[in-house]
Image (cartoon, rainbow, N blue to C red; front, side, top):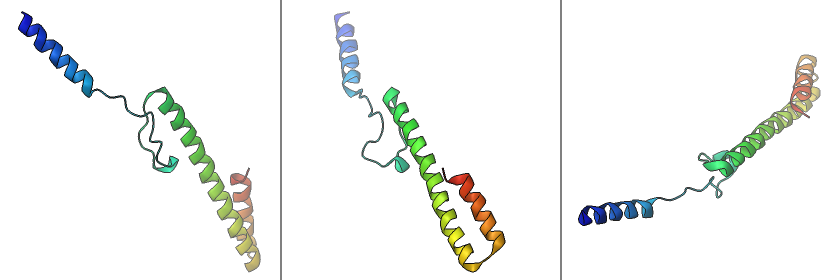
Length: 93
């Protein structure tokens, strides 16, 4: 009985030594390239990253619409001007 108890304790001790807690999120990466989140802190960071990425996407679309509007105005194409003005209204806050 003592031998089996020693074996069980040894196995559980070794498995406990191998157990590691993962980082909550990949702190060394930019929000665009993070793929793994764990725990409460990881979930909070994931929400922050998603908000950042949505704002960034809207800002990129806004910037593109402004550039395209300037091009349409220089070309004097009324249809394109109206289209890009609608895009600016939709994307730019």
